[in-house]
Image 1 (cartoon, one colour):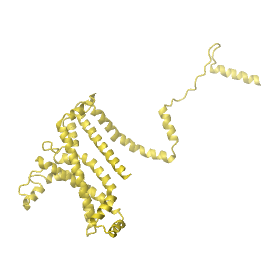
Image 2 (cartoon, rainbow, N blue to C red):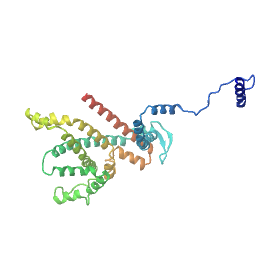
Image 3 (tube, rainbow, N blue to C red):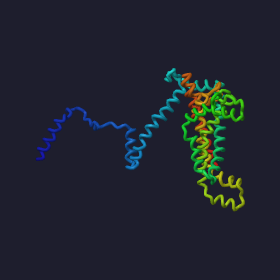
Image 4 (cartoon, rainbow, N blue to C red):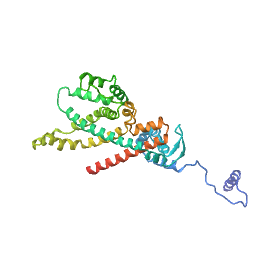
Length: 337
């Protein structure tokens, strides 16, 4: 019986093709599907997740794909183009290093627009913050029609920016605009200026439109912050003999400080990147006196077809806002700590 089994094993080994006598015996590794190290890491990480965590990752995948397609890829392409030489279709034909940035630095018009952008942002954010706080304090007072007033406050912010800019462009028209017609008919200004045609008034006209659009945001945000303050703090301050001004300084401002910080930071980013108002109302004119970085970038790219310098302006804008946001947040959290 044992001999038969040995014989069968020998036959089966011969059928599999035993090596000839004298040939070196080899033990090849068992062949199997090749798994890359990256896939192995991903598989091990996925195996450690629970069912709920896998479901959460699955739900996040569409959003991540959209972010990759509409945020990460355009940002990466813009950075590459900023360091490249492009043709009129925006295709990179070679790399010039910092050449586009050096060309911008040597252009006096760029520095004038750069300073104007900071002036535009500083004035807009300051006026919107202070006027929004005053409006919120008024809307927080008890008076008849307060709900209607709050509802009307939202209208300028609820209207899309381009529509508001177009309406104001018609309002500022020197021949048949409502503003000049009102000033003439009431006698307040018999000979009003051409608001959008004169450099000394075009910038102020654009600034007024930006403030009109952004003011309701600050008013509503500050109003929400005011309503979150408990009345007990005001009662305690009144018992201590604090007047209206003292209660505002010692109670209202400290509680509103986080709201003011975050609201002003968002407003800096939005105002710095505001394209609709200066481009639709005046298209950066007259004589480029209302151009800011984003309108100058648009003109450089799509009017002059210089995509390299335009991408460099985009990178400068991004880096400027990133540095400002980091410093702003660092100073705020340092004071809080």
